[in-house]
Image (tube, rainbow, N blue to C red):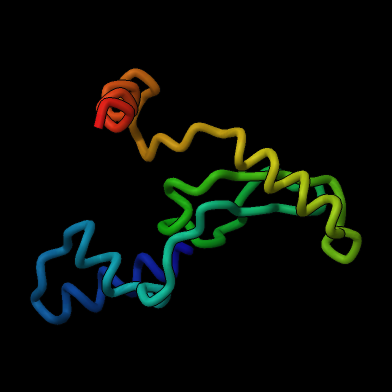
Length: 107
């Protein structure tokens, strides 16, 4: 979370590298792993608690009241079903996505 962002920025600064979104991402500890599409938070907590702050920017969040040991296959199916129903916009509005969807359908 915060530590990862701070250490990546410090490493880039020490190397005299420009700190950009791309260079910062590349300097982070989890740069070799794709950003998550879905983050499931169990136990009724409604926060990320410093977990993958940078990587969670465009992740869909699913909150469950079940504690982790009780999070079963049915609950996972519900989380995935909720995820599938969502419109992934990656920082855009629905209106901005509609022209792209129309262009894909026309092709």
